Image: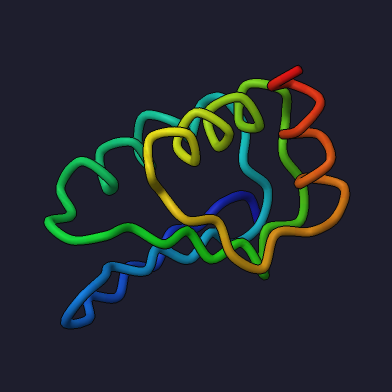
Length: 85
């Protein structure tokens, strides 16, 4: 499996599940899904296995713009923090 996006709309938020391996080539697709969502965005990263540098930078940027990251693996969370420093 490479990368899959699943989107769930709730009353107060939209959850976007990220599944598999996210690389730079997937950023535009995820960015489109985020921009098309009308409510608070939650990125559920429980099933996100691997990321590359560009994906980490994009996820960090999303978080600084108000997107909530949940179920983020420790290595991805740590990497996002290091890229912000």
